[in-house]
Image 1: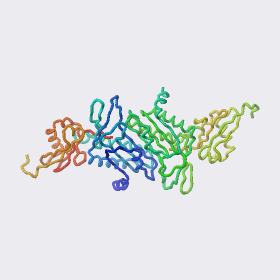
Image 2 (image 1 turned 180 degrees about the vertical axis):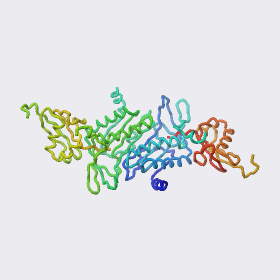
Image 3 (image 1 turned 90 degrees about the vertical axis):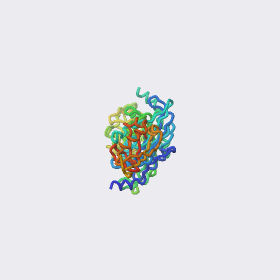
Image 4 (image 1 turned 120 degrees about the horizontal axis):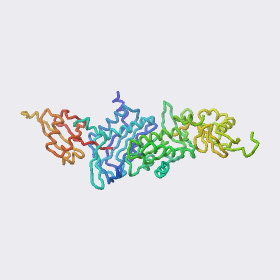
Length: 157
Length: 157
Length: 89
Length: 89
């Protein structure tokens, strides 16, 4: 049942990886259905300064064949927990300049509370489980980032 | 101290009432500072169906001279509670068609958790305290809406 | 009641939303005597605009653009607004 | 160990992020014998790409695009990915 409902509803959901610039306004307006009253959007972008260290640009890479299915799993899990109607997740890959958007998560719901909760849960889980990696290029070198609460402890050594 | 800080920081904050169409993407990108990593946006728009009742359009009116100061007060209170950097609140007035955006609240923060919390708090408080009224025009009549948790009990009879 | 002209005050009353429709006007000047409170103004408005009194229990009042209680004092030339439950967002 | 050709399996190993840079390659075929687990593949990879073993404790492994544990069985032609802690968002 849950699966069927997900499949029906998810016709308007979208999960994308792209190397093109993200148009946040356009992405969020793709999840505006007639029964809804609110869309909550997270716009994540490249920060110039982190604890006094200057970032010049970032490069994101993904295991695309696994990242998209993982995003869809997150979406199905979000629907189990929250009264939401549509979900859109778009993550950019490749080189990003300062201020450019890396990720957009848009969630539409009849009531805003569910949209806020689902959007916050989705970005937390995306950062934890979706196979995407960020390499920061600082003025004085580069480094692969460590994620937040990655599932290493749960899966394998 | 708190006031001075608010005044300094709030140079890039904005609080607006307008009868023009809202461009959500453009509004949210106005609150993207270099030290931040996330902007959370609430996009509230006109719902077509509410409990089986069809809305044709809405009309919003405001006590403008009081609504803008109230928005600024909310913003100052949000800064006291949450680690946020920029706030933008734009509310549309006049006649709105189905799907058109009535309110945009955009909050930028170094860390997304504060942005989510502040954005959700701001829309809750805006709906409770800012003098704006919505009149719904249904297929079968019209009605002024009652707000959520309005401060009637606190202030006067 | 007052024998002295200097005790007369005039406040500007604004109506919004359903209260504006009930009053049939956006704005009216209300004359009363000093000292006066929000309650004084409400009583004067309700007797003049009977339909507005139907909202009495749910109305909020602001004095000079700040939410006010029934006991709040009002002064000459104050701007008093009659605010139905807000429903922005 | 195996005397029988049918016991030989070949899995495709993918490296990402810091593990890809450590391995110096995106992809390699690893030959081993059946039955095998994720741990068998890790041991083979770590002995061939010493630098990758430096990530051993933080690496996640997927088998055919699903997160897997060290005990998970691997079969001929499976796609095994070596995933450093993810950092999307």
